[in-house]
Image (cartoon, rainbow, N blue to C red; front, top):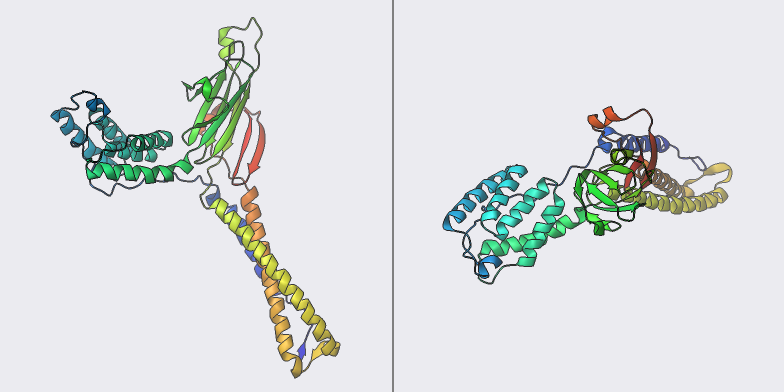
Length: 376
């Protein structure tokens, strides 16, 4: 004899365990770690040769070009830079290729300098060097290594472009504000528009005649765009120059490096959850329909052999519905945690030691990024 009408609840513990596992995984310390900067293409080919080729523009204009000694020195520097790049010693590689370029202008040297700069996190400089290679191009009779350098630059600049962060700085108050990033002044024409910037931590100061200086520190991830707004406070007419230079507020905008898998995983989790919900709903409706038929054919919830196939079908639909709703719950929980959970910030010891106990923070959250903004 078979019974009908009983609930299938053995998937409930599995649902609870799966949801708990997903939540624990996403909230683990590994989830909050910063993303590691992608390494530049490995130097797998022969070292760049600073050999004779079509002369650079300066030489075409009448300059005699580099001497034999310059070329020999450039070749030695290129070999050292190649070895350093191969060993991922990007600082040494960048130094050697820069020195070699000062002696001989060659696209092979520019390409490998750009690769070293990518390794150092100097993405803006690397992008500009790739662009320079492409703009200059090579002559028809150029060495094959030069032709390959141009082709490499076209491929690698396309890979680098999405990784470039940008920042938009606006300043309210003074008519002619002055802004510095990491101590270096930027042109007024850069204000209010996107400006390419390397990923990492940067200190931004805004100044203006008759206004107090303001400072904000930002942490930019690769590929991120960030708006930083200043509203300078006007100083009294008798304020001294020293007072004006004192920072009235030290705002901190912090964003957290996101693992590359976070956003696609979140989207996939919601997609899987939606598919599970659809499966659970459809099979649930079919199971209810089958239950109605069996209720008619099986008085007092007792079915005979003639109804065995329908009863098995009902049980299968019920199990599929349960599985679908479990998948929907796990997917929704995982996607929600990925969307709303903020990794813990990693503060420098120097910053922690200088902060007072009064902290005003305003959290912000968006799709694939999160952080806090406030005054310390």
